[in-house]
Length: 161
Image 1: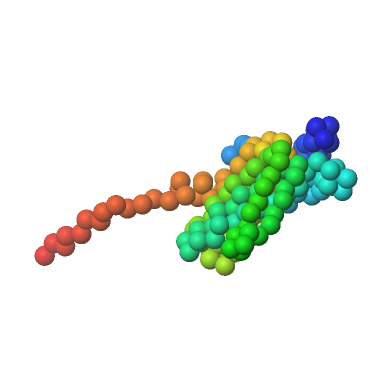
Image 2: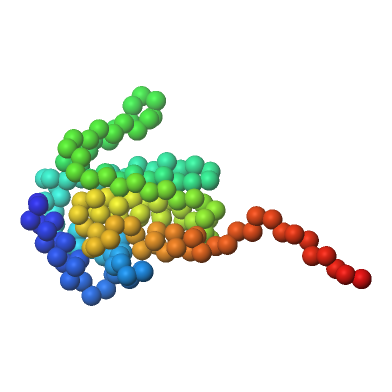
């Protein structure tokens, strides 16, 4: 599988699209990483060596997603209906958090965004990141947040008679 990961890394490096340059660093989009992952690893590789599982914690104000790539993943429900997950030989993990009030898209799609981000981070931890580690959207949002000027206090304007 190591050779296939190296081959996938080369495909990402050579890809013509699915990349963004932000402040001189190249970032690879999650869709490109997923496409390369799926096209470079055949069904036999995935079924014999790795399984993927995403756990979502959905709260009122935020969503936390954790995606695991492991050799064996077993999921079953106990008598109380609680999901029990056991894993063997975890290969890579990706974690993401989305705040529902952070953007208009997160008001309706925070679950989907968190899941996509955690899958992308898992693939980055596997070695499929294409250069820089953070996602394009994370870097863009961080830069925009840094550019916001907050006014802590306003002094009233005095008018002269």
